[in-house]
Figure 1 (cartoon, rainbow, N blue to C red):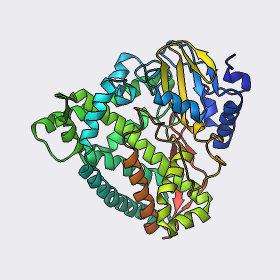
Figure 2: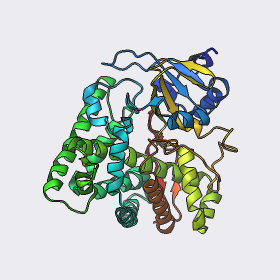
Figure 3: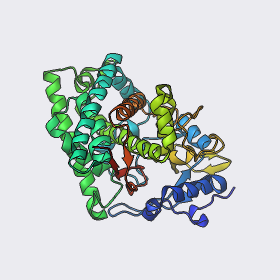
Figure 4: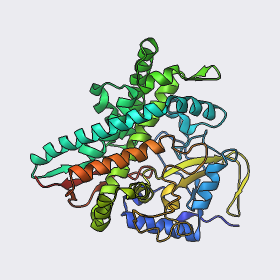
Length: 422
């Protein structure tokens, strides 16, 4: 069976201009790919300092995304899960966390990390989420009162909440929170000019961001080894499986993963959720009146937003997918945003429905060894955040259109003005 090039259909996922199109235009392009070329070939994007790669295959159907995620022996993560291009070793040092590892090392590190996430710690984190979200909303109201009722939801609420939760959980000093947010934004910028001026500067800035976050965590891990406290860093420093513990560098890499994955996923889902509910006031009203809708509403926000757009897998041998043959070493980009709109799985997939059930979305990744370790925490964060917004800012309205991040990797919103009565 011949493999179709996406550009033959007038679609180029490697062109950064594609990711400046409206959400409706992008969804239409992925619907066309699912229908006409569910595994389509694309040339790799060209970036300074990177050699041109062999190209990749865009995986757009829900079934194929699930299959590849569940069979790591055929489709590995260890050659890079978060970059289409093969990263140089100096970048792998910072970004070579669990997300870009394979078993058996991945399984052991995941078990060590999981052992530190005790039920008591998670409950304490949720208590922090409630307290922090109410404090953050109170601060946002103060900003609104000085600005005719308006404030930026991203900078005042959606960004600081998950960041402060992660920093509190890890024991990061409050004085370092602004630096952590700034460097996380650079890592996840996708080359957006608001964060990185030129492509030539991009690699150096991303490397520097990883170095700063790593240095912060290495220092903290060393301190906790000598003087343990009740935070997650102390738990990770002292956790061990089969007499093996995490190195300080592995803890630093895990912290970077938390900063970029845990922070951005919750921030993006929160912002998209507020926007979609503003467009559908009847659903907002229904959720505000019935807390039993929280579980399905949170899942639908994550499905509809698909905060992380894709992850990469690499064929460990010659494989057959969807009736097509691919050689060992082939790169596959699993597009979660497309899988979450697959009409063979979701009825009326372009409809936002807070009561949708079942909802087998892959917004936290598909089931497999790399399913998001923090999915339940993110769900709880979103549930608490929306409940507090409903209580403390019941009349919040979105003003104008959101300013969207220009990135293929994160479906982010940089700024979104909202207004409340003051």
